[in-house]
Image 1 (cartoon, one colour):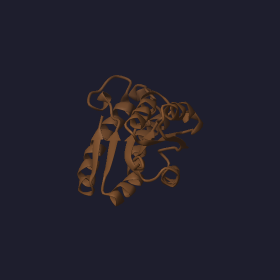
Image 2 (cartoon, rainbow, N blue to C red; image 1 turned 60 degrees about the vertical axis):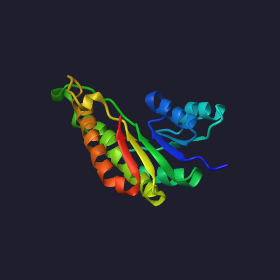
Image 3 (cartoon, one colour; image 1 turned 60 degrees about the horizontal axis):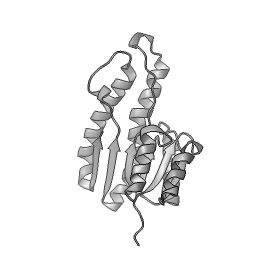
Image 4 (tube, helix red, strand yellow; image 1 turned 30 degrees about the vertical axis):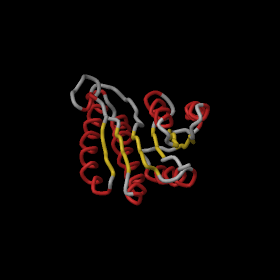
Length: 181
């Protein structure tokens, strides 16, 4: 029996992230469910294990470089090198441009853009060694067309689209594909 490939899913405690983690497990991947709190991922990890899959919960703030390095080290030590990374972690701080605080702007940019960058940089090192990897960045239609009250969110998701394109070009030669959804 071959060991399962490892999928890292950020923002895995609930919503889209939890659904993605369960789906990756259904597809035979061992899942590293990453969120701000490992305890928050207990339900999704339990569901995966009850269905016969392998999953572990990890805590990380994707916007902090040292936190990302620590979680990637922990994932590799406990499960193995990642073959798939799904950058799903996200936050909402919706407000009109003239009402938005600089702190809310920074928080959204840090989680969506910096978080995708840091997690990808940490995972791609392992993928490059394997000569294979898949990265999926969760974007949004808000990154393609504007809507009132979504200044930070829409701008960050537009940047995620651009980052995804850049990653795709730069990582392809290493057998790593990058896509945005």
